[in-house]
Length: 249
Ligand SMILES: Nc1ncnc2c1ncn2[C@@H]1O[C@H](COP(=O)(O)OP(=O)(O)OP(=O)(O)O)[C@@H](O)[C@H]1O
Ligand SMILES: [Mg+2]
Image (cartoon, rainbow, N blue to C red; front, side):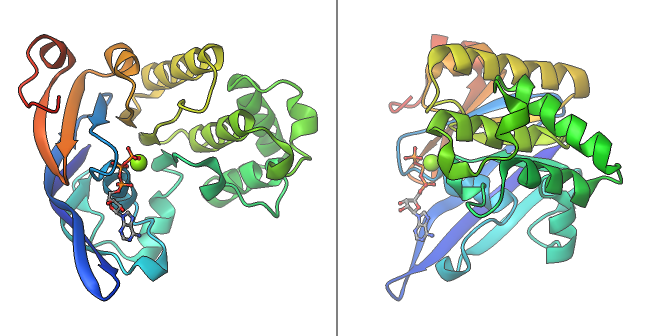
């Protein structure tokens, strides 16, 4: 489903080229959950962002290698084609919820917009799906919530709105960057259950970035360990816990 082949990411920083990711390769099968682990700053988030090319313009990111999704190289895809894939075929849950919520629009509008762009559904059906998904991620009073703005929600609520937005179009691939770190354990368990259901119902593949080894043990079949911009270990979850190979692991 996803094949990252010798990915290199370079940024222009103070007139100098820096490459926080250099030669990363790993793949993810259909219906598979793969954990991406590694110490802070090793390049997990930038690797995830490069799949959908979601870098700020100012960072002047230069990407090389290949990222094949269903056989097609996303690094070579036109912007237009990528817009059709973002949110619909590949959805992302970010480490920081405000990166994907627009502070100027009501919660309900933002979620409805996703379905308007990517489906031909009628207004009523869209509204019904938005409400159902907000309830599914454990947000009470969804009917009032749709009229509120992101700033009036707590961090945990915003995180769940973002998760609802990511799941709304039933993506083939879900990329989660520390999806539950900001949530209390009850809600965290609820969200992980929801992700597991989604995977069962529609064979969604999941790339899960986390520092939480409990979550890895519970959710993932395979694990990719990064260290200083490179992959240093890839194994099944069982082998990772029984026989870690790299010192960092
Ligand atoms: N836009 C950018 N311009 C320049 N350097 C960047 C940019 N974005 C990220 N970096 C650098 O890339 C490196 C990898 O960062 P990244 O956010 O991918 O780490 P991470 O593995 O996700 O860490 P954490 O576990 O703390 O989230 C860091 O050294 C970071 O400073
Ligand atoms: Mg990160």
